[in-house]
Image (cartoon, rainbow over all chains, first blue to last red; front, side, top):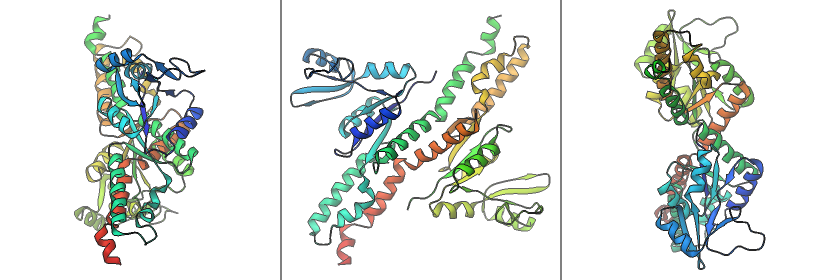
Length: 211
Length: 211
């Protein structure tokens, strides 16, 4: 059986990662959602292992020490992170798992899990970049240069990703992400692996031993 | 505008390349089909530039000398080849083009056009490879070893391709090829290229000159 795929969905803040991810899970119910670990106390109705893996600060620091997290960060006094074992277990079961995460976290995941499929969600304004940078022709040279440097920064982040999906429309974005998943499942490496395994099980020597 | 994609659909003989390619063109009417050049005389109803580019032997040999073919081969006294300019012109227009070709030809195309998307169509028996090799347990060691070497040869060809698509069902195979095309259009290189171009057009120096 082939391993599942780790899909990392990221992009600049405000681009609609959460909306696209929810829609995608609705369309692909077999897709597993990566559950984060956190030291934040559970809110009413939140269930351990479903919404989050709830951990004490000590437990979380143990996970950091044991390299049990693909990435982690601290926000307003609480730790949040992606447990590696949940991801690995899901992939070993042949299931695909999606991780929705901000850009810095995604880059950390890539260091530990380069075989993930890294998708950068772009705002629909990509095609309007030019207009945004030039503005209405009333901006100073300094403003244009600042905008240019921001655009270059955004572009450089995209460089770390495998794919870019423009979020012009949630359904279209989901369709493109679904196509990327299908295509990744067709990557020849996955077939070669399977064939090698099958052929390895069938070497004449072993075949002879079995008789 | 982004360039189109060259999709090279290949695979072992008898796998159903032609059937899948025809079905795909029916489903994706905007997909352009690569037209071959040949020295074979036109048959009734065949049109130059539609079915083939009909060439004299001398013209064809000029094309070979001028590196105007992505690949060529001789069958029963006639030359057949893939004109490079038709492919390049289509790609420059931002359109995708598909080339259906046998395995040796595809490898030659890859030498001249490595940025193509190379898809290997597999027979539905991939999963039954094991059973086919072992047979019914009545075969000699020599037969099993021969089958094994054929399987390894097939596998090694797959190694040169980007994707493998199992032709278990024509519609499913077409859907997977369509997904591969969508995913390839989402490759971040294509977005980076566009962004670089846009940003290049917008350097402050140039912007200042325009005022």
